[in-house]
Image (cartoon, rainbow, N blue to C red; front, side):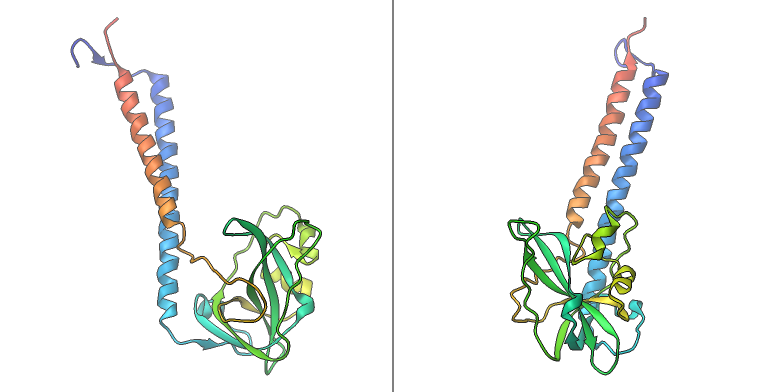
Length: 235
């Protein structure tokens, strides 16, 4: 009791406060988990970077043995199977990521190479011209296992050059190529005019932590407000 005020909680406001607190705590926990997931990916990438570079063989590999490892592949690009991954923003500019399959020397297997970023034109129907190194060469980078996308805005967008999302199984069906289960995210230099400024997988962890703090602070504020509101003078 504070002065002549007593703690007299009301039922409906109590239910509403409890629901709001549960929701905000749940959202805070989700943001905290996302931050930890990103940090775990960053640690995995750092650990993989300290290991020797793996040469990608012309036979199927287990993606789990290669994910985030530094890899190299020697072969020749199949230019006609190049696709552009849409809605990729770099330093505030809209553009595409350019992906071209590389036929690995010594066999019939391909690895899809994410070669880098190119700016979009002023018109959406005017696609950028991509320069591709000719002949057999070696490409180095990081092995990435692309995730699957359950929700697609329009599946028909994956029938041409411009794609909204990359799903390896769908690309393999579209191209008819025998693909390795990883994408080679290129880091080696090439005279193709593409920008290779890749974001680390742990980028944004601090943002998630900040959001988590805001949700937890809101839950605390709701609780404090409810307690203060519940101290009332006797009728």
